[in-house]
Length: 339
Ligand SMILES: *Cc1c(COP(=O)(O)O)cnc(C)c1O
Image (cartoon, rainbow, N blue to C red; front, side, top):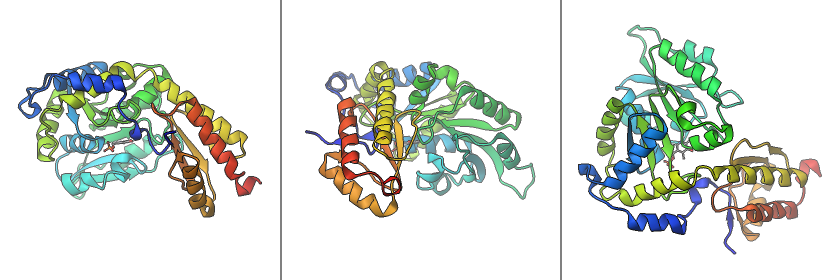
């Protein structure tokens, strides 16, 4: 039996239907603008978000970096969350490669950034200060959904302060499915949105940046500079198109499986944070982490066990897989604190 891999929703393999779409894809040299499947994906993604242009990247990290660099010149500043992927998990690329100064703000428990703190972080026009140029938010963040009301207030604030806006929407479709709201409505007002095809949507690689044409044109130059210009990328774009067509609504299954996992673990005595989308967080005593990870592996469950263990459901985990994971946790024994 294949292991139940709960490390991330990036571990999904392309389905047979997706591989077929990839094999059939019409391709060309996308650096010359010749790949019809890439263009179709970019147009389709942009249309879904009500934006004019799209651009395919090999990864979400590169898409976010190119977006930040398209918005900000050297020495300009981006306001973002202390826990944001763009700040924490992208190797400091915006600073290293873009000479962009990050201004992090602590994320609230619900994942948002306090609007007063954003306003207070915008620097006055004074040569002592970097020029605050951009507000970058993330949705979902740590599996949490940021609702439309907050997003609308945040983009209004940015507009009033003269900032442009970027949304790291690596898992924006998880948020949209959870809220039952189309992505164009959920993301209205953002100048650029970065959307991963390789997470819950199940494509092997690829992220689409959608946005206003001027910004996307700049991002295209930056993508080439960063080494992200791909040639017959239609093979990947076909997987992305297939994912947008067939793997969006089914994210609700991942959310249901996360709920099933959380309930099972809770019933077995583990301390669990109630999931909003496809991520379950479980508290594990630090001194038991290593033993639990080995125990799970022996039971065919792959997880990265830390004091706040993240378990992620996805296309390749069904209810039976969830039940196997719950059984493996239960067999390890109740957590010491609850015993
Ligand atoms: C995965 C992810 C990215 C992009 O990561 P890559 O591994 O480079 O594709 C960006 N932002 C968030 C929130 C993510 O989860």
